Image (cartoon, rainbow, N blue to C red):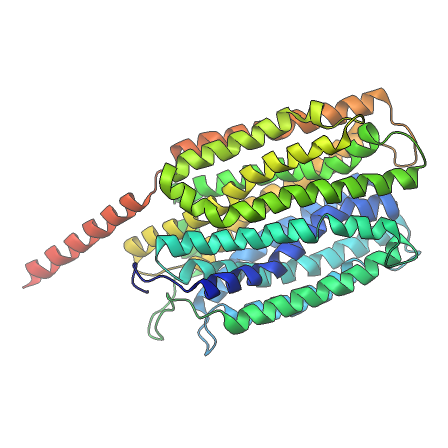
Length: 472
């Protein structure tokens, strides 16, 4: 491992941000388009889509530990992580094309099975890239500033995708600029996204160095079962995973509801097609404002945390997220639709801090594990970190589908019922707040810090010296 005072060059941190683009595109595009495309355009029920989301996210989550442990054990001339990044980027690009080009005329049952199988391949490729890439970042440096900085650029890259891609794609689908129909436009967009995934993934694999924590050839990596035991008995790790998992549940339930809320509450007049275009155009503008806010904030979060403390900054960030949802009855209004910009700015400011500050917690856990066991397992801890929040994402996907179906929303109606409007409004405003409140509690009881880890290292070193002295 490198010296704790030796910092990585800024170029490596930027390349790590570039390397996160395939991960972010694959993850965010699915969630932002799946209901819009397969429900609104292709007619599959929201509950059926939510069930697929549950199945493939559970597969994605339980597949991660095997990939993580395999990358921990891999020894190659390219390092432990890079071969998987290359394979994941190429297969992810192919899966992107498959998912968003469904054959016509399959019927409801055939379409459901097509979605299930293509999503299965999609998220297998995602795991193949995502787990080793995240693990690589945790092992590039033991310097706290480097670690926070790497994760800051990672979140900045994610917000770039949220800023420049996620809000723009629905607008391009419905405005007819690149295709004669929504599905033709989507097919061409998928080709562009597949190219971006391939290029960014291969460039990152080329320019990022091997982990500084690569074991020697004579070091035997612990097995998967041992890794499971270590993870599930690690209280700080479980707390860190809980914070980001609960935050993601609130985020996804909210994002999946926004499009329906805008069609039901904000854009209630005119032809349905024009209202869809207006809703996606509004989503592009407000999403751009929020993601731009997050992209600007992300590189500076680590500095701010160093000044006021990580736990205090996390508490403030979660408070901003709670405030943003509590204000939605006044911000989602047909009189001033663009007040939603305020919601996006507040929320993205908070969630950006959460993503930047929780990822280094996994690095701290790996530090403690190395002190206790003598081997760094970024792969298995990354995988189990992903397992926690992916299970939450799977459940939130199902909850979102049931929420939309339970609201009584009918995509063919020009005007939704009062009961539907009321249900969507208040579930959107209050349900995420419950999850964010639980995040506040977990943040308050998280026990690790730099001082704690340094003390553990000193105690370990003192015990080693004492043992050596006694043998003499």
